[in-house]
Image (cartoon, rainbow, N blue to C red; front, side, top):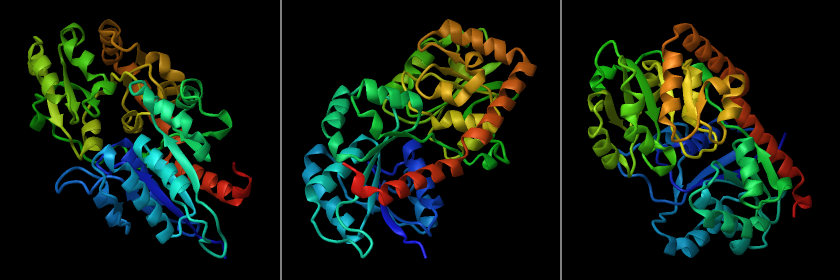
Length: 390
């Protein structure tokens, strides 16, 4: 009978987001004949009523561990807490997600590990696998710290080839340590069986809906999208823009929207749990990001059968494939955005063809079961050959 390996999936927090949902899906879909997971969040539990992955995990029988970190000054304490947890559960491999969890996980293993056997089949320190989900272009010190501590990491998982290239060229990480595992979606759940009633969000009946979904922060590019709405949205007389998400820029974005002559056609929905249903009721997804990794919302929109207009950021070309040229623009270019939208929405045959091609590409290349299998294969290989790791 094969040995079941104990692993820890470690992340900064469990509020709902792309990385957090990926971790939850991974934890719930693992082959329990091969792996026994625990889930660790550096942050405290999400506040009651806040959108998070905790209900999803607990419904699947996984009770997350929360280390309670709130600020950088707690780093040494959190490292000790994590190290203790790894020993307590006899963890053999740590897979971390996002910068802070990546750093704490490697430090916890490097500095806090006691040379004691874990089980009859395993001894020594856990294998360390770090997840890089974005080409970090804002906090360059993240790159420096990652490069300085890379000797404590056995492998890096990048979500796209473009993120891997960025990690090598800009981050200075050794190429032999990098593995690419693309994100995946449960395409069989798309399109959603029911469509959201967008009139409840301010959209008048009969309007075409352009939906933009993401955290309202600098990286996601909502600033230029909203501030230039008069230039690209006004010519689209039968269209409204629906912005779904929360974040620190929301108040500024709403103020900027009120300055536009098309203000009555820009709607802010806040965070929503029914994104699949909103996508099913929309006509096209707009992604205005400044930088990315492999945006899950694009995968979801494609699985729904929608055309996409996205900035040429990391992961987009790999996801869209042959239709990339028809569905991408340069960041911050409202003229190209307007032209691309008019071309797609003004030609129902083209819109339907792009949507069908997008849906087919997700089913063939970005199945979530393929993602889970790739992680499991990597972990098995590393645990089998751990004596050869640096």
